[in-house]
Length: 133
Image 1: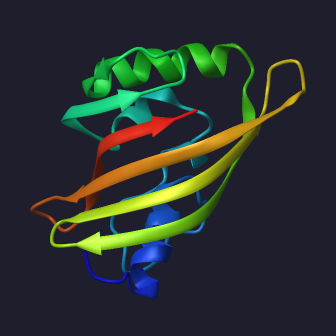
Image 2: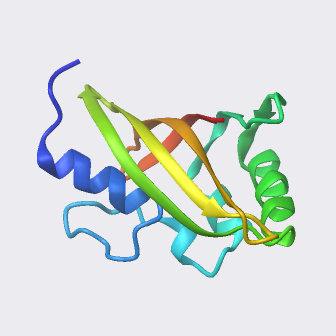
């Protein structure tokens, strides 16, 4: 994989929970849409694999939406993402990040996340693989 451009890094940040869309990035972070699980799920490919810390293997946007519905109903808020590294190669972008949020009880939660995006025919990016702990 070639070294990512700054545009690629900003695009990944935009996709992942940034409320300021970048002009070069058509995809938009769904976390800024009022904690809407359907909007989050729309950023995943139909055949996406999502591996949450529950150790479940979640497939496709419907499974992703179900997971995030539960997360949001349990009061998780204030999601933040710090990108560690972005690698871009061909139609894929891989991002390694630290994440943090507030649990429903107000506690600080966080961990490490990996996102693999695939460029779509319209130039936008969708998640192909997402895992976090």
